[in-house]
Image (cartoon, rainbow, N blue to C red; front, side):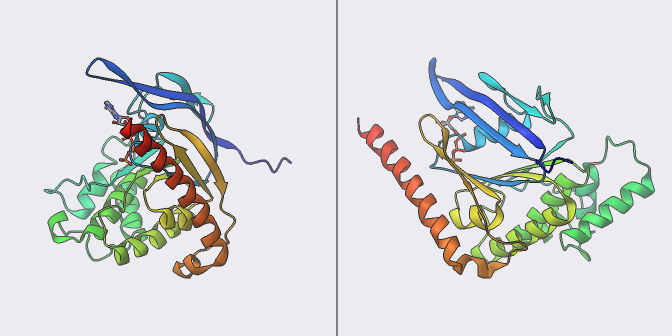
Length: 266
Ligand SMILES: Nc1ncnc2c1ncn2[C@@H]1O[C@H](COP(=O)(O)OP(=O)(O)OP(=O)(O)O)[C@@H](O)[C@H]1O
């Protein structure tokens, strides 16, 4: 039997050109990536290098100008139930309880009431919100709100989770707790994750691979495999190998930032 990992997401020559005031702006150019099933991939790079654009194209929220995305071999033509999104802004329904927000994601599902109740309870518990099922978003902290967003994205069992700076608005302590929680949820629920972040520590801590995008236009500058043991806990950030990865990625990002600054001066 082959031990080769199955390709989950094939990003094949993907480029995106936006029209801004009648002029073309190349956001990303010819990105090729092969993401394996259940892999955790972080995407980093300087501001404006095209991280969100790439994620939106994988999510089917935007169309590429060139190339294509295939999921399980099928070309992406729009959003679909095989992908869940978590964004930086909480985007919860303020008039619905925690349970109601999570359950809303199952609205179109053909499951019966009992199965839906069971799934909602399972994910409330998985993200550590037991006891808060009937709370409203305004009664929750930022970290708790993002836990609701994660539960809501996972409850309909997508096989891919697309996360765009999901912990960007949280304080450092809450952020660290959320990273550990996310890894636990990922290990328990088997899902392929694409995670966009500005935080290099976060990118390394979470991922099997860190993709560094080059800027103007965005393309893959580095595809770094993170060979750190799992399960991971916060002590990992002091591991010498962690520091080696961090230095390499920060150097890449710095090079790109200097390049952009030089372009801006011209
Ligand atoms: N809808 C749009 N219309 C026009 N230009 C866009 C649009 N979306 C993104 N861009 C441009 O494409 C480039 C990449 O943007 P994108 O938001 O993907 O970068 P990013 O790496 O996610 O940035 P950040 O880290 O600041 O969030 C930028 O130059 C941006 O101005």
